[in-house]
Image: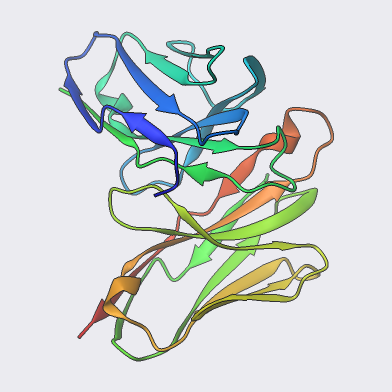
Length: 115
Length: 117
């Protein structure tokens, strides 16, 4: 158990809908990262928050947004969903804001299926 | 372009045998290289992390090597077990030129390993 908790584990929704994925980082970790893993694809970095503020942005679509709350949990909002958004969404957390010298711990992921 | 390429894409070995997975990268500037194990439908779990000055690092039956000159890494699994069946992902962290770059993990596509009895 990495200590990173993601909910829900599975989500099935229709095209055009909006969903929210939730992540609770390991106790004490200040950074939260979101990644997307499509079928048979590598993980793609979406966005990072550190202590409530956005720190880095990757290949995140405009239809997607995220935030980190004062208790450090984070939510990833996906709107106007398309079939191609079906994927595993992982959250990771780390103590520091840079991964150059700190470990990242991954949650078990949320499997999103858009039908 | 910053890329991480892994080979082979998939591998089947018999229980008890050894195997070696390869990783080539073009990520720059380089900060560190990590190997993760990912069971199907689960989150990646870190096996090793190596910085520029480290040539080899072990974690139980897993031994990773790094050649920063040729930008190559390998993961050697000794005396494989059925529980080693998983995807193994090579991940390179970029050093930062600005605040954004310092947070980028570049993931390889993974090697899917199946260990058969």
